[in-house]
Image (cartoon, rainbow, N blue to C red):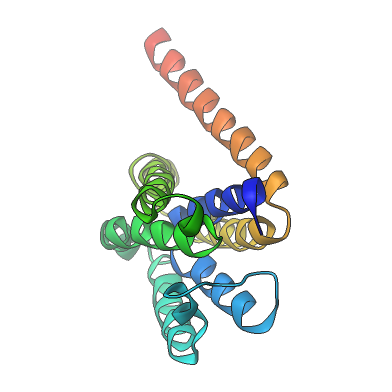
Length: 189
């Protein structure tokens, strides 16, 4: 990946990390290990080691189950407040050769902001609203949908970064529109 495609891929992977830190890290690690789609430069090539892959599988499994339990998922979101933005920063810097093109701090800050923004919307707005309106019943299906979205977005970010960029714009516009509509509905009552 090079140029614009690399930056678009980095944004897509960082956004995916805002939903689930370990899924995009694991996908990048496995793709770097088994394909030529991602070539991780040092020090990011450590992501493709068996130790890191194994650790990501364990941490991802813990996060997967913690996110399905209604009371535990909110505690998990608090813990993930620090992990997801950091994962986004690592993914942004590691997934492309952006580190060699721009300053590593700028790349990591961009990933931190993208993943952190997605995480804040998820943890502070969407999930509490879903829990409150459904009494926690919708938490499991929503969590599974988030995992599927994070997986699909991660794979597409590597394979087709331009489509992911368009998808991010559409989803962001949809979320802004829904929040705007909700705010207007509250003001009307």
